[in-house]
Image (cartoon, rainbow, N blue to C red; front, top):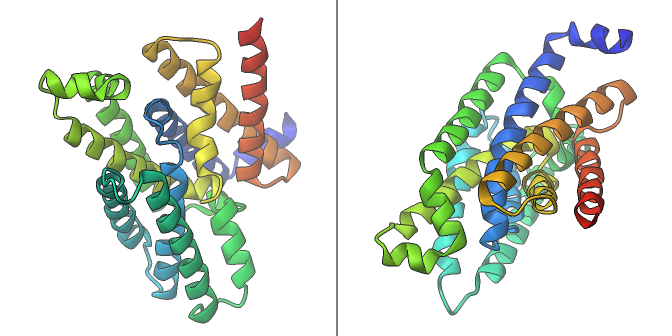
Length: 274
C-alpha cells in the first residue's frame, strides 16, 4: 500500500488510471452489441487500420496523430460496413483484407521512412501498449476523456435503437427504425473507441478489451440491460486492477489488463455453470 500511494503521487499515474477507467467503460458498452451482431472482429480490423494510420502520422512527424488516425479509422469503419453488405465480398473477408494490408503497410512505413533509432521499440509500444498509457500528456488525457464521455452519452441517448438493431435488425427496419444509420453510428463509435484504446492496450489487444467483458457478463445474465451493466462494471474493475498490478509489478500494461480480463471470464464461466 505504501508503494502504491507513492506511485499515485505522480501525475502520469493518475492520468493513466483516469483514462484507463474511461476507456474500459466506453469499450464495454459497445462490446455487447458487437458480440450480438457477430461483429466481434471489426475491432481487430479497425485496430490494424489505426496502427497503419499511426505509422504514417509518426513518419509525417505530426504533433497530434489523432488528427490523422481518427478520420482514417472512421472512414475505414464506414467502408467495412458498406462493403460487408456486398454479396460479392463477405464481411469477414473484407475485415481480413483491410486489417492485414494496413498492418503490413504501417510496419513498412515505420521501417523505410522512420527517423527513430528504435523502430522495434516504437512498433512494440504501438502494438502492445507497453508504455504509452504512462506517458500521456494533459492534452491527450483531455482528448481521451472527451471522446470516452461522448461514446457513453451517445450509447445512452440511442440505447433503445441500438437494442432493437442488435437483436432483430429486420423487424426494426420493418417498424421504421433507420437501421442503416444505427449501424453507421455503431461503426463510427467503435472506431473512436479503437483509436482511444490504442494508448491503453495497443492495437493487437484492443479486441480483448471490447469483447471479454461482454462475453463474461453473458455467462451470468441473459437480459440486454443486465449484460450491459455487468460488462461495464467488469471492464472497469478488471482494467483498474490490471493497471495497479502493472504499476506495482512492473509488467506490461496492456498484457496485464487482458490477463485479468481472461481470468475474470473463467471465473464468470465457472459461476455461470454453477
